[in-house]
Length: 176
Image (cartoon, rainbow, N blue to C red; front, side, top):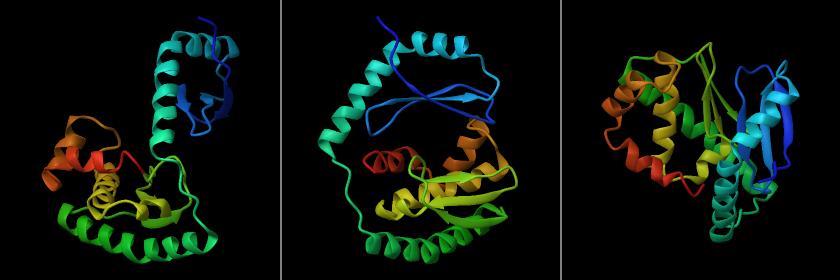
């Protein structure tokens, strides 16, 4: 099998990562100092994964074409996010005994939320397109990262203590 064509993005990261974009391209994220030969070997070793996930993305797009959101709709979703998400963070942070450094609304396209090393939470306004149960999962997930910076057993134990149905809620986010 021949090696897939890919777009390379280097950044201050520690690991190599593959992504299949909604434009059906392969994106490789790599550390700044990673040798090109290592990146090529990584892509070659994962050719099966690339083919499988390319087809999955193609089917997902076919089943759910991306919605076009007007600038007015985006502005309304941003306003709603700025009201709704900090309130949900306050609710769950009190319940979990955690204190985020702040809450920011972003335009992130590839993730609904993130937690920085300094415990600042970021949420994409696109999260507001999801059902409330899914939104709460993302909020609790990011709050759990304040205590556990990884996805280890203790992280999932904390997540399950707040949202015992977190696995079912995750399914709600699949099509967004």
